[in-house]
Each structure stands twice: as structure tokens, then as C-alpha cells.
Image 1 (spheres, rainbow, N blue to C red):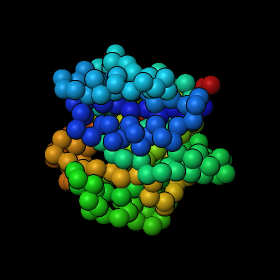
Image 2: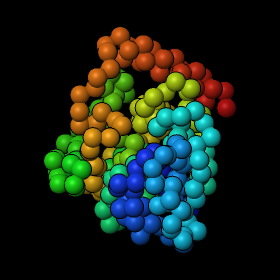
Image 3: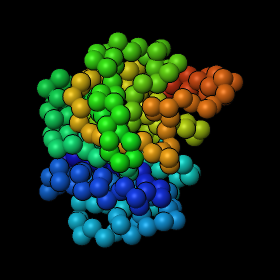
Image 4: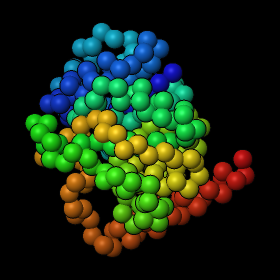
Length: 240
């Protein structure tokens, strides 16, 4: 069973296109788990307009924000393999099946695919977000300093999910937490294939493709916080 987990918030402009691109790839027993962070626009109405039992909708029960909204969706998921999906991208045909096959063939716990970077109208800005072999040479330390992984390009098995949850309370980038935790403790695979269109627009939450506006002091404090919680989780795994 496959679970696709999506976090939504005021995404009415693009969400239908993304849901359509995902639903068309799901099997009968698969699911699209959507957690909404209490949107004030028509996002929820669009989601509920689908008459599809594979779509499971929840309101975020955790603290507000992107990270814990995704965490809420992940906690509700039931699949053996889990994908993350942003509300405003578009999956290319075959993304789900090709990533699942790649994961199984390589015996990977976590896989990261490539994507094309686009503007709000899906005009391609960069054909490949990741340059060839870029992810393979990015060490844990390099990602700790500057994260290269995109959550929307990730898929992983349930063993990894259960070990990585819950997210630390003050984690503000779930993809960085998942990336570091995966590289430290699990077998990771990297696909050069471009499997979805990664849309950037004025209301995009992350800094991918843009320069971060966070101060150096904030970045240092945040990395210390991450390092401490990664250490705590590592000790916890060793005791199991």
C-alpha cells in the first residue's frame, strides 16, 4: 500500500492540478492523506469536492506550520511506502511507480528523485533541480550546513518513518530533519530522473531556489538544536 502525504494551507490556486496528477497514479488500495492547516480560502472545499475514497482528509491537530502539518498527515498514513507531496507542484506520469521500483530494486529505505524548477505558470526555469550526481556526493555534514534535499522529492518506507517521528517540537524544515536522519541511519538512493514539476511562486513557503533570509545567528542556533535532537534520537535507536 502506498501513502502520499500532503500538507495544505490556502492553496486553492494550484491544488486541483496537483491532486489530479497524484490520484491518476494511485492504485485502488493506495491513499492520498491530506492535512490542512486551517485554510481560510477554498482549499478545503476543493479537496472535499473529490468523490474518491482514496483521499483521506484531516485538519491539522498539531502545532501550526508546515512541518507539523506534514507530520499530522504522516501520523495518519497507513502505507508501507510513503511519499511527500507539496500542494502546488505537479507530478509527472510514472513518478510513483518508478520511485517504488527504484526503492525495491536497490533495497533502499529512503529515495530522492529529481525535478524541474518552474515559475507559477509551469514555465521551466531549470530543467534539473539537482545537477548530475550532486546528491550522491553531498555528505551529512554538507547537508547539515546547507540542506540540498527537497521533501517533495522524497519517498521512504514505514520503518524509516516510524524511527523519524515525532519531529522535534521546534523543527521548522521537515525535509532537513528527514534528510539528516536518513543519511545517518538508513540506506538512501538517489534518482537523476526528473519526475515532477516543482513550482515556485510568491506564496511559496520554502527557500529552495532562493536565498534564505534567516540570520547567521539563527542558522547557528538552529543547527545546534538539530544536532542535539539527532544525537538524542540516535541514542534512542541504539537502545531498541
